[in-house]
Amino acid sequence: MRILTLCLFLLLPHLAAAACDGTDLRARLSPEQAAALEAAEAATLYAHGNHWRARRGDRVIHVIGTIHMPDPRLDPVVARLEPVIAGADLLFLEATEDDTKALQKRLTGPDSLLLLKDTSLPDLMDEADWQTLAEAARARGIPPFMAAKMQPWYLSLVLALPGCAMELVAEGKGLDSRIEGLAKAAGVPSRSIEPIDTVFRVFNSDPLDAQLRLLQLGVFPEDLSADLLETTVNAYFDEAHSDAWQMSRLMTFAHLDLPEAEIEALLDDMEAKLLIARNLAWIDEIEAAEEASIVVAVGAAHLMGDSGVLNQLEQRGYVLERQPF
Image (tube, rainbow, N blue to C red; front, side, top):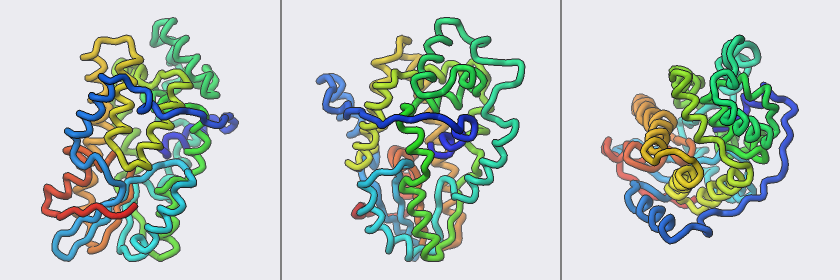
């Protein structure tokens, strides 16, 4: 998520990045993996579509799935969305620019991203596990001595990105940022759909041993991380949310040397924290808004599934129609 990578740059202002050169993993799946991907897609509500309109009476909500990094393929998308944004009474974002800046100021001193002064990850892990983690951090341009002081949950999210992507995300020119720019130009007010520190509070509440298990999910080789990024971005422009999410799960099962039941539990826990709980809270926030015409622009993964924003709106009596993207 963009806010987390921006915070990383506060801690590591000289982080270097190279050009990403990944390949789409969907073209390299085994027949069994391809069948699993197809089955997951068929079982997922609202598995496709980056722009939907929801109507209930006089109320109209446009739900737009965003990506948090720049891409030239967004240019025609932004042009098509401009009248939609300009015609809204309110724009909901995961985090507005002002709220993001406020959080950045809070994190310039002692903050919730670092372990306590007398604690470090090498003290909490087996030596072999720490060396694997240190190498993964080093490959992304993060000095191991800095990684050693990061909260495990935070480092797990950081390591889910290849080093080549961090600077791109930190530029802040993804679709969410560009939509906020359209809203400002049109005089449409923007609002964060959740408290800016929500993710920090959720993960910081986990005990360290649970965070350390979660950390294992993010330790992919740099080249595999680059491939997953390419796959995720391509799936986004294919408007195939399920593909992006399920490919990450498939590669986790293929890469981690852990019992399948344990991997499943870790992935389910991550999904519950990053997607399900937040989706349900967001729906309450949307329903509480008084405005008649609303745009909700949030990460595309939040659109799909039983708990996704789209299905939750449908469950509350909205009629949904897919829109051009």
